[in-house]
Length: 219
Image (cartoon, rainbow, N blue to C red; front, side, top):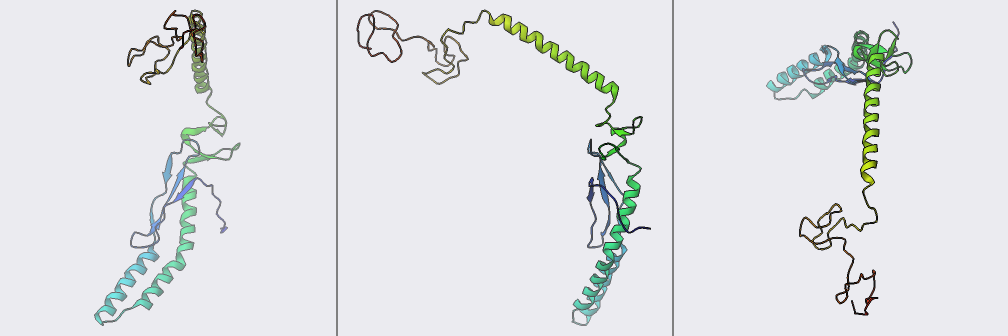
């Protein structure tokens, strides 16, 4: 059997190396919907043996009033030496098991789950979408587009009565309330968008004028 391992990047390593809970587990995900599948947890016997051996050494040396650091480190070293090979073996088993849960698209090379797989075409649903689903989606888009067009036409018709030349103030200059183009402020009742008038003859005063152009009264 070849020592090379072929895999995609749609997995997550959940292995635990240290302690009595040491073991191997991998989580694979669908590249389209991101649903996941986890391989069964496989305990790592080497680390467990090293852990219990280390505890036994520490207990024995503790009774003698000494420490067994050297022997404990040796046990840890033996466990670590076998970790890499054991992990690769477990990873290969997980990949083999994942083959039954995922399909590889021949077009985009993504791995997808059964729900995202078009078995009739041998491609993922991203590359070969379901015809019925696409037809329903297109029908809904057409409905939305037509509704938008009719609403736009209705807005155009209503806009014929809108006078764009009428002065409007969107913010009240008196209390700073948003007015939405109303004639009076809803916050303070201020009369909005009114041209300044001469106090003497009521003539409209041009913007920036210091005197009334009708009677000469100072503004």
